[in-house]
Length: 152
Image 1 (spheres, one colour):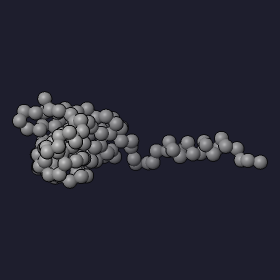
Image 2: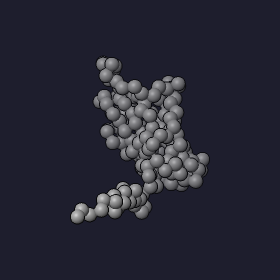
Image 3: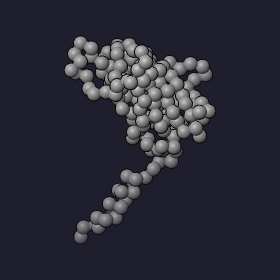
Image 4: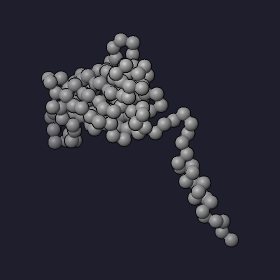
């Protein structure tokens, strides 16, 4: 006689949906940036809304330095943020570190690497993880560049 299949499926499903204590879903809107404002320089601004723990990809030139402002819920004021470049590049934070201010904002600079390709920044705030996504353009072969958000 074969063992019943239903109890095994119930156990498997409960393990799949189990939420570990101390961790929140990456899409938890109560601790996620609501938007990001990317100042590309030369009066070009890109404003992105958060979507499923990531933002739309933005195109950058090699070695370009940009200013990034994140808007979090004001209830997160005082919370420290860790901004970690995953694919090269450099994050620069002024003052006493990257902390959400009383208006819910946090700003920092990012200098892209000099090599064409993906350039991501992980943002750790509290128990959440978000990702800013950039593409360092191939100026010699623009047809190889993927579609990216454009500044206005």
